Image (cartoon, rainbow, N blue to C red; front, side):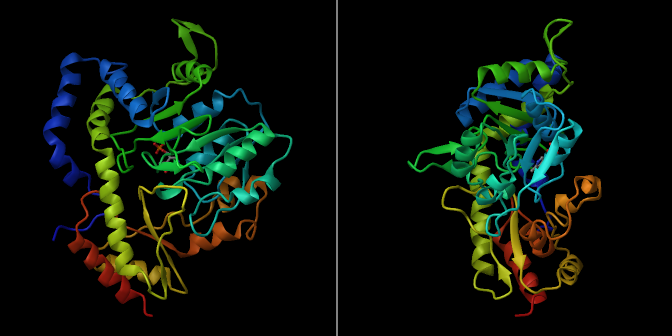
Length: 376
Ligand SMILES: *Cc1c(COP(=O)(O)O)cnc(C)c1O
């Protein structure tokens, strides 16, 4: 059995080595390292895959979120609502732009923003909702879009962990996450479901004007050479990363299916265990299992993690401290008890190795030690 790792990028690379190496070497031969044709090709392929009008590539997922907010013409003090149970980047960009971050608690089952609690957080200053499709499945986009429409709010989807997952509309129609709100933001960090071999990101939108502004903002607010119309940044996807992504995009559905299969196999191992709760899939979403995250009931998580590590099984806690209790956000004035579900999840979640190369032998091994460490 191969050593168990949280992700196995090496094993995945071995299978597509020829295509990747060829595509990268074309970029090197062409020397079009920035804004080369590979970037444009990948952009078009991703637009087709997502069925969205515009993909604007940028340097990473955090930048994607930042330039999206910059494109909305907000002013200091405007409020942005998001989840306290996510990676810091989602809220960080809000604060960096002088906007005010407002949190709304998440749902126990899906880890995602609780749409039923959204309305009470809305004030006259609220301008944007950032739903985070955590661990690979959709927030309740039906309800969220309805509320956004009612209060005239922008919706910027954080789809960093859910590229390829779909929201299932009431009509049964499926839409790729990131194409439902005004903009969708994705990260191509190596360990994400569509990851490159460095940093990368993109924004998606069906809105022509937003697309124009986003392209400008990513390039110093420049639309005509050395004429700067908007305040921008330098945020580009480089051609070598686009070359990697263009190959991996062709395999994305297959990769997501492999993760789903591994999740179903984990479920078989852990279901019906009195001290372990397996992940739930909501009826309005497909799930691409960026993470496979269990909830432990009345269990000493620290001991369990140590026991797993002794047996060379890596496990991770995403996320150990909800954002409203982070030191950096102290100034927002939140306190313990404000978002009880996010707090309870932070105390009991554990994510297991999840990637495209996981074998049933490895999963059985992980399952055996995990169940041994959790006494019923
Ligand atoms: C990874 C991630 C980001 C940031 O992406 P980077 O490419 O690392 O900047 C933002 N939000 C979420 C939910 C993420 O998982």
